[in-house]
Length: 380
Image 1 (cartoon, rainbow, N blue to C red):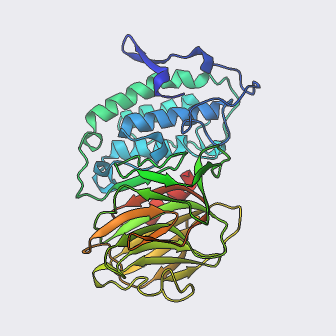
Image 2 (spheres, rainbow, N blue to C red):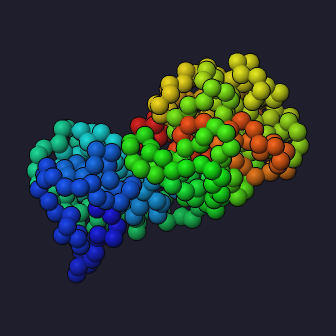
């Protein structure tokens, strides 16, 4: 199910593709659209519920389904009304990676949508799904879609315009066979890197870097930030320092990096007199500004770097891996362009090529909170 399969008949949303209707467990080829298909593939009612959730997410936020669970800047938690908050809670269940954590049926989902529409909290059912006809989700689509049309039309959190001054997601490169930025215009040029399977085994779902001369050159540098968050999935296969992301400046020693070795992850943001990584990243692994980790070749790891003015915190697979009590800033100096998978030092010398896979890089212009980190790690 995807937005193109929803049409309005006499003012009511309906499914338009009869090819979507099939008996549960029916043997068929894996067909569908990336981002709407759940990790386990199609063929069960839970899969239809997942794809419906992604359709409602796009209708609610105006964002691409691959950006889930990110919300527009105008819909940050402190500004949400109770109706929107409860609807967002429903989405996190509907779009859970584990099918057993989704609603057991379209009927149960519709009941919670009705409750939210009436100003009541949802039941948030997480019971094991029942075996029923996949077409059951279609019964909930008309109600669910209509309810959300009403919610979106009346909730100011979904109609306000983004403001660059507000905390928000400023870049998102899914790296699903290309280097397009889904939330902005900082698209990249792929130099040698090749499409590869992502952590779910989806073809062209990530990019592979050979550790020699592959990288992605982005159109622009990152904007000035005193706080920021970078999240990404990595599958590191190198034996030496590999650059996940580098934003070089034209002034020696004023850069923003996150780089990886088999035993350490290094962080640097030493502009405007800040100390994080200054003089030690990327050249001296194991010293200050490096946090221990153990690379397991062939395995994907979710990495989150949260930088605040006086400290930086690293999370791996949703768990806190370390805190660096050092000032960090990405301000003041003229920036050169940003790169993924390598570092162009002083705009001319290529260094620290990354060897392995990179997927789903996101950058926020603020420090995201632990609950959002958990959601990103689990949802991805």
